[in-house]
Image (cartoon, rainbow, N blue to C red; front, side, top):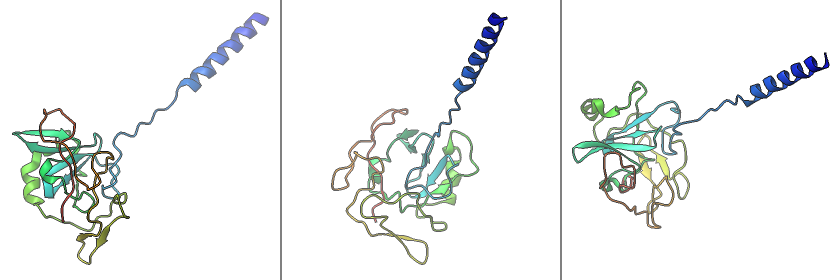
Length: 185
């Protein structure tokens, strides 16, 4: 009888230990960047009309067309090294749930031409440097009050003058440095 009690007690301990071992893992893949628009934490892609590129929140990469192919890079091409991600308009792709947001690029390019600005957008975080640096005007446009500061949201990739380093060479799957980002006002 004593043996049966010990076996039952041992089984209960093992069962209790197994229940505690089942840890719930909640991985938050793709935290929106600080320059992303407020209120859209569940969206995977933004379209950036001014640079004709997409941003994949889950992978933290830009997707743009260069050299005849769509590439995924950590940075925008060099010609957009001064593009202001905080001030530039982001089209939130709420209704798209695939892995190739550029599938309807021609439609997006036509509907959201360079310079497109919908309603005013507030960014999730503040612009690096001296505060947010964005002043909303009455028509929803932005003025950059923080000139001279880099807009690098991934630290360590700009020098003190806000210049970015890198090139546009690489393969389709390369996610290394490809120049910078930011819009020069």
